[in-house]
Amino acid sequence: MAEIRTRPLLTMNLLVGALQAIGPAPGGDRRIGVVAGGSFTGERLNGTVLEGGSDWIIARPDGSLLLDVRLVLKTGDGALIGLTYRGLRHGPAEIMAKVARGEEVDPASYYFRTTVMFETSAAKYDWLNRAFGIGTGRRTAAGPVYEIFELL
Image (cartoon, rainbow, N blue to C red; front, side, top):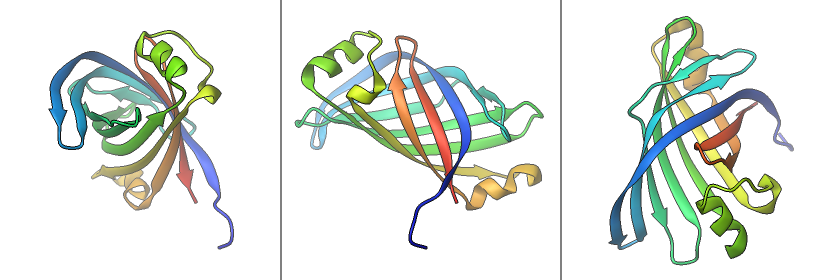
């Protein structure tokens, strides 16, 4: 296959509580964001993000953030789906300072990308067990918003 094709999968809004600051670690400044909930919508998937997921963040010395996130999605028909993603966020210092303060900034002014995997026992959504996703993100005052695409 000479090209990478995608199909829109879902838009996900996360509500993130206060960060738990672990502090300087060998890879950078470690902090953990506890996910307080959220929602997701898409042509084939809709529902809520359950409370209790977490985002293990490393703020690297170069100013970029590495994200390691684990969530549980609950579809409108009651199926549970584990969603994990690794992400990378960086940009010009002045833009990232605005993002850190919760200000709305143009998502094109910084880099925010994710790689996504799924896990479920629900037969209806079994296809997700064999799919990769990629996403673009933007940060709002309430939390991140992701546009996730299925890699075909």
